[in-house]
Amino acid sequence: PGLFDRLEEQKSDSLLQLIALCNADPRAEKIDVGVGVYRDAAGGTPILRAVKEAEKILLETQDTKSYLGSQGDARFVELIKPIVFGEAAAADDRIVGVQTPGGCGALRLGAELIVKANRAARIFVGQPTWPNHAPLIECAGVEMVAHPYYDRDTQTITFDAMMDALEGANAGDLILLHGSCHNPTGADLAPDQWRTIAELVARRGLVPFVDLAYQGLGNGLEQDAEGTRLVVEAAEQALVAQSCDKNFGIYRERTGCLFVKASDARGAGVVMGNLLGLARTMWSMPPDHGAAAVRIVLDDADLRRDWRAELDEMCARIRAIRARLAAADPRLAYIDRQNGMFSMLPLSKEQVLALRDDHGIYMADSARINIVGLSDESVDRFARAVVEKMD
Ligand code: PMP
Image (tube, rainbow, N blue to C red; front, side):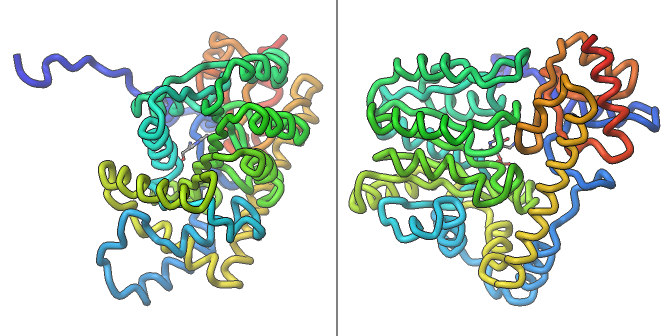
């Protein structure tokens, strides 16, 4: 038999299939709430003004494409660090960071570091979670322990069940937490829940691994980092997988960082050496362009201000649509208490398929919707169609 004859056929990505189905639907009034990228009122995903400006500057001023090394753009990492951890933590030499190919790269690198540090460490992951978490973590060889997080039918975080499950974690085990905003549910932990987890982490010697992929798209850049800062502060060791792909709108540029907090500066130096070694075995060096553009934006007061303004506009659009959906029917009121681009509707797979057939409304089979797939024109129509199916 040939080398590849033993490979098993793989299921194709269901969200990509959904895009194809939606594209093929001739109905003018169809609604696409499937794809997980930010969309403006006109349905587009434009390049942010400050990013476009930074790219022009980059084109004019970049004078070499020589290697940068496995850490990537060190200045970029230095500029992202205070955005994630706050100005006060920027100089904390227990926290080291490397540039990664997006949040995915950061999650994978973090998982590799965990396995290398302790083969027996397990990671506790709330359900449901982003479908790519398990493959990214398990392919590195980290054992995943699933626990309840959110009940779709009552639209609540099952916090007590989550805390009960976490009581079963051993010192040195990890907890995967969505910094903000939760994908796929939109249900972020409340400040007092973050505090309870921070206490548990400190008391039991657990290691938070925070996935911070949507900072600035929930309630604002600073507010969206509060939970992350709380647990990282409380923990002796922690990891944060950060992504710029959403809050700078540079999805295909694959731009992010992995930050790791060690017990002391010496330990952090050892971690850094290991991160560089692991990165070399996977991508050698991260792609430069996105990080270089972000660096230029953050290093320039005017561009930085304009980025913040445009990010706030995006955040406000998400909040406005959430409010409109919530106002449309009491059964959708919970949507306004959630954050970010995603929410999960209490609909069965059959109801999801019926919305597709009857109204040309395209959402994932899990009933996850992308809030910004809706426009002023479609939001009420969408709410009516959904509520009708809930009856
Ligand atoms: N974490 C979550 C929760 C995500 O939704 C995503 C992207 N969909 C990522 C991480 C990875 O982001 P990136 O595109 O930067 O790899």
